[in-house]
Structures are given as C-alpha cells and as structure tokens.
Amino acid sequence: MNECLAGIFGLTIFFAAITTRIRTFILLLIMQGISLFLIIFIHRMDLAWYHFGFLSFETIAIKAIFIPFIIYYSAKKNQLTRERFPDQTSFYPMLLTCSIFIVSFLLSFYYFKMSISSVQVGVSLATILSGMVLVLTRSKIMVHIIAYMMIENGIFLLSLSVLTEIPLLVELGVLLEIMVVTLISSVLIQKIKIFYHKGMVERLSLLKD
Image (tube, rainbow, N blue to C red; front, side):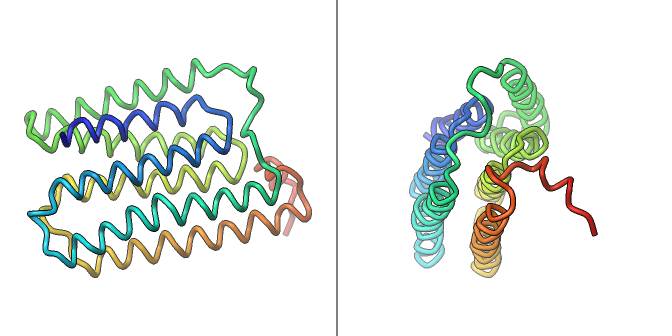
C-alpha cells in the first residue's frame, strides 16, 4: 500500500512536468497532500497520538487545503491561468523527468537494497530534483512557488520513509517555514503584478540597483 501511494505521489510530478495550467498545478499539490496523509494514516500505529494528530493536520489542513487555496486565490486575483503556451512541446520536460526518476530509483535501490522504504526514497528524491528543474525551466513566479512546495513535499516524504518517529519540534519548524514562505510569496506576487503583468521572471532582469 505504501508503494502504491508513493507511486500516485510520483505521478503528480510527471503531470507537473507537462502541464501548462496553474489550476492543474494546484490540483497536483492537493493530491500530494492527500497522498502524504494516507501514508501517515497507514503508519498511525507506529506513531504517538500527538505526532499522528499533528502530521495529519499538517498534511490535510495545510498541504492539501490552506496552501493550495492561497496559491489559487493569488493566481485568480492576478489573472494567471497558464504558465506557458499550450502549443509548446512537452517532450523534453517529460524526458528529463523520466531520466530523473530512473536515476533516483537506481540510487534508492542501490543504497536500500530493495527495502520497503526504497520506493518512497526514490520518489522523494525524484520529487526534490524535479521541483528544482521546474524552478530552473519555468518562467512564471507562481510556478516557482508551486515547485518549491513540491520540493517541500518531497522532503516531507523522505522524512516519512527514513525516520521511524519525527520529533514534534522539527515538524513545527517545517510547518512554520511552509506557512511563512507561502504568505510572503503570495504578497510578492501581488506587489509584482502592480508593475509587471503576468508574473514573468524575465521582467525581473530589467530591475537595477
């Protein structure tokens, strides 16, 4: 079951590599949050009740509801619907994502010797690397924010697959980081919209000290 959920989580990265719609990116974030919650729910017997409660709140309330809603609100307010033109090819992004997944799984299976957690480790590594690729290859700042959130989800999945018990203090730090970055990024998008339409990164290169 763990492997199936990790596989569903991994499929969201493939869709993120080829999609052009901001709304689809947001739906993928929701799917990732739900997948993380289900993984935690499966291992609920191995966690203390307060760890399970906090992790459930973080994955459902924050990752699957709050963050996607903030991004959706900001995108709707700034009239951002697409990241790029739909006629642009998605072959090379998909090829690069497949290569990242192959390398990540080879490294995971090599170091974990086909253990139960090797699939989750492979998916989490591929998510982190694919999120970095999204930041480097996409032009809209909104997609950069979404890619950063996907990187955060990949790190979260990695912590679930490696650690048997996650300290509450560490989770509080991760939660605070996600909330602050989301709110700050949302404010930045709104302020940039005043001067530069469509939130394109290329316009920022015109700024001077």
